[in-house]
Structure formats: structure tokens, C-alpha cells
Amino acid sequence: MIAALYEGLGGWFWVLIGLALLVLELVAPGTFFLWFGVSAILVGLLDFLFDLGWQSEFLLFGILSLALVFVGRFVLNRFQQVETDRPLLNERGLAFIGKEFVLAEPIENGFGRIKVNDTYWRISGADCAAGAKVKVSNVDGGLLLVEPTDQA
Image 1 (cartoon, rainbow, N blue to C red):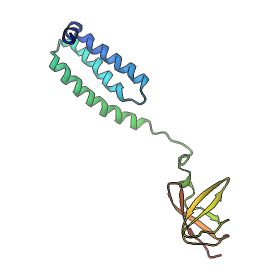
Image 2: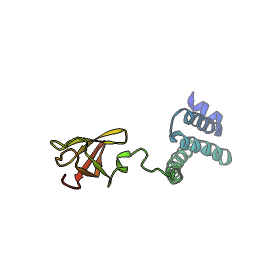
Image 3: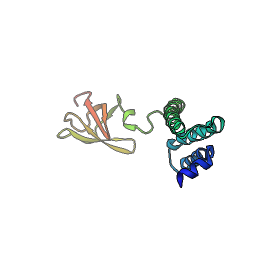
Image 4: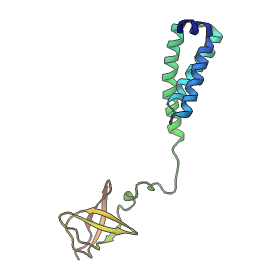
């Protein structure tokens, strides 16, 4: 039944599959089905022009799909890099590296807290008394790694 439908439609089979994959691309996020849909449409068009056998069509579909996935990913990755005036917007902790803060609370057993603007950050470093100055040296997730700058 499917073989008869496949043979009866000829190149239209691939065009319809390609259009269905493109519609599926609209529903699914990303660009996963786009390349397979374009490949199927290209195979359909080539079938109209050259009257390919089913083996050639499937082989051509596989080769075109792989080629378009690699080329498409390369092109999209190249043009999706957006320049911004705030590169650390979603990585706020990295913006604090190299900055100095005064401890409102002491660092005890290697851990403490500092207040930066309106946010409290967990810190890790050598034990220090309240009022000491510390400098952020690195970030580990949401934990700021600090080192003392003076001994107050």
C-alpha cells in the first residue's frame, strides 16, 4: 500500500514529506527538522528532473540531509553571535572578579557572605574578621572565591 502510494506520487512524495517536516519545524523549537525538510524537497525536485529510482532517492536524501545539517549549523553559529554592551549580563558573578569589598560579616570556617548592592553573595576564602577588605579572585557557580587584601 505504501509502496504503491510512493510509486504513484513520484517526486510529489518527497515534496509532501518535506513540507510536513517544515510544518513540524514550526511546532518544534530549534532548527532540527528544517534541514531534513529542505533535503526532502530537493530530492523531490531532482526526481522530477531526472526520474530517479527509489534507492537513489533515499541515498540522495541521506547525503543531502547530512550535508545541510553541517552547513546549516556552521552558518547559523557564525551569524548568531550577537555583540552586546553587557557580555556578563547572565553571569553576574564574573563581573565581580578583581573587585574589592568590605566584609559586613566575618568569614568563618572558610565561608561567609558579602552584600553587593542589594544582593547577598556566598563567599569562600581564608577566615577574616568583619570589616576586612577582600578581593574576588574567581567564581564557582553562585559562590564567590575571595582572598584578603589587607589584615584589618
